[in-house]
Image (cartoon, helix red, strand yellow):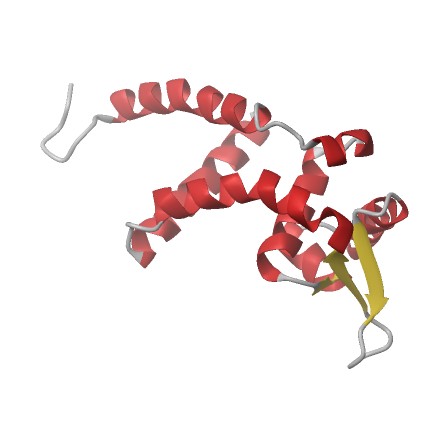
Length: 151
């Protein structure tokens, strides 16, 4: 039964139980461009590539912070993608101890075409919301992830 402010908790849960598999299925159906199919990209690679695509070259430590994993984990992923030619690594000119990671020019168009769709989708969905509403959506999805992980 709907409340005066929208859906009841049970209605909301039912709506999300129906919606989440569709979102996941839609994301899985994003066709990997031919130029990237041979690289055996895992979901963890997609998150890393998305950050580098959207934010430009980043250090390994910055990627680790954003991905919420250890820098050694990012170093392994970057090393794997760099060996395959998907990423370029270079020494940071401001601090020679840091490595800066960028999408290789030869794969930028394929990566942008592939992952740009998700970017456009989230921008369309989140763009009309206020800052507070966007924060609520993200907080809610994090809470869901944590609740399911601890089940």
